[in-house]
Length: 438
Image 1: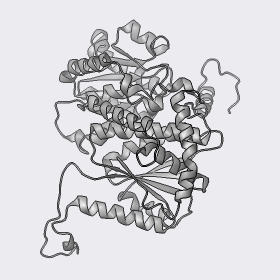
Image 2 (image 1 turned 135 degrees about the horizontal axis):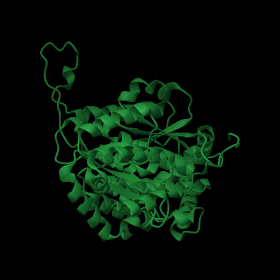
Image 3 (image 1 turned 90 degrees about the horizontal axis):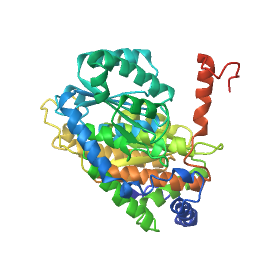
C-alpha cells in the first residue's frame, strides 16, 4: 500500500506536514500506551497478533458443518456488526454473485433496517431456499437486530422445527451477560464472543466479521495476515515515508484545520462500495462528537461523476477527496473494433478497461485538484483477502491516531442514543412513559 501525496503540493506544504508530525506521533503513543480517552476499547490494536487460533478452527468447523446444506446465510447485525463483513465479501465476490450458482452460500443481510417491505421480501426468499443465520449483538436488545432475529427465528422454527433451528443459528455476543447471551445458552446455539475491549466499529477482525467472511468462502487467515503485517508497519515506524497510517492521519487533520470539513472516499471500482460504507461508519462514529470531526462521505466514480461530479468540481470548497486506487484488476477486458464507429470510440480499440479507467481516475484527480479540491490517493496493488486485511487495519489505526489528534474519544458513540430514546418514547416502551423527546 502506498499513500500518494503528489497532488497535494498546492494544499499542504512540507513545513505543515512536519509541524503535524509531533502531534500524530504523540497520538500514536497515546494509542499504544493505552492511556487516552476510551482506553477500555483498545483490544483491536493487538487483535491480529493475539486472536486465538482455536477461534479460527471453530469458525472453519461451523462453515464445514453448515455450508453444504444451505443456499443462503443470513447475517443479522447493524453498524459495525455487519458492515465490515459486508465490505470484505462484496469487495471479493462477483458483482453478479446472486445470479451465479455456487457451492458456497450467498450472504444476505438483516437487522440493519426496519423496512417492512424488506422483511416481507426476505421471508419470501427464506421460504424458497435452505438457510442458516448468525445474529450479532453484544446486548441482544438493540432494536433493529432484535426485531430481525425475532422474525427470522420464528420463520426458521416454523420451517425446520425448534431443534434443527437451534443447529442453524449462531450467536456472536457478550461472553457473560445480555439478552442474546442468555437466549444462546438456553437454546444451545453455537456461540462466539465479541471481546469486551473491542467496539463494534473496530470488530471486523473478530468473529463478527470473520465468520460471515469465511461462510462466503474467503480466506480469513490471509485477511488476518494482511492486518498483522500492517500492524507491524503502524507500530514500528515513526516516519511518514514508512507509516501510511501516520501520514493519512496527519494529512486529514491538516486539511480539516484549513476548513476542509468533508472527506469523500472515492473508488473507481463498484465492488469497493461497501468498503466506503464501512469506512464512513468507522470515521463518522469515531470522530463526530464534541462539535468536531470531518464529515465522511463517499462517491463511486465514474458513475457519480455524472451526478456529484459537478458539485465537486464547481461547488463550495469545503471538501477533500481520498481515492482508493487499485493497480491490478482481477480480469482483463479490451475494446473491440467497430467498422462503422458511430459512437466515435475506435480510438480506444485494443485498450483495456483498466487503462481507460486509470486515465479517467487520473483526469479526475487533476481536474478536481485544479478546481480547489485536495486529493490523497491510497494505492493498492490488487483486491484480495491479504490486501483488504492491510486496508482494514490501516484505516482502524489511522482512525485512532486521527481521533486523538482531534482530541476526542474515538471509541464511544453517545450521540447514537438520542434517536433510540425518542423511538422508545414514541413506541411506548416500558420505562419511557411520560418522558420528553430529546
